[in-house]
Image 1: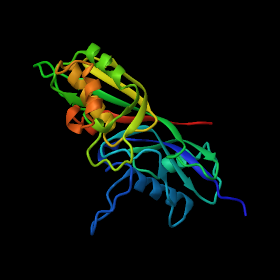
Image 2: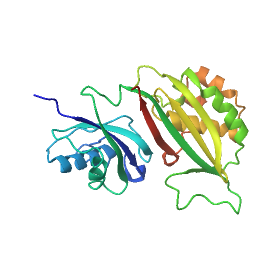
Image 3: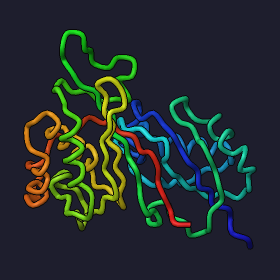
Image 4: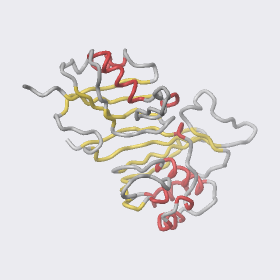
Length: 260
């Protein structure tokens, strides 16, 4: 008997109205609205099966967005890969799109075979009379009242790159055996009037790690500490040593990479 095809799909979503990627079933309550849940419902509607598992590469949090999330599922039928993204998107709510599809080998796992991920954090700032908090784009960009300088943030970002113990950059009960991660790049650039984007890539990220890195770079940008303070924060291995956890709306999963 031939193995059933395993599909790898690229998914984009506005995370505003979702409780993150992963399915959640509170005791004695209705399941929460998650991206994994609506993806599975769309696949089941298309394939006419009663149960399917859509496995995601990254467990994005509530309110976090994605344009490059990767999901996999198995079904009996082989679909036209050019049409499958449209067929699934037609069965999804308006805040989720499937962008691409391909067939991968039977043992492909989007989590264990991932070699790197990239995230972007977008932030605007200011509280002067002529400056206003984001309104129409408030769900996809974060805001701070602090006045920020770009250069100190760029300098601080250089210390993030490399293999470090990121214990200070995750919550205390993170649930991971190791807090050592390797960051391949961390860059901060001006992307608009009073708007900054932080792009970070690495071999894996801890719970809230990117949002805490963004909050720590913000402290350098507002002059609260010097960029080289990052060295002390790593050495402390204490969540209290790092900056704030930035809000989720500024964060977006950009891409997930795999070796060919």
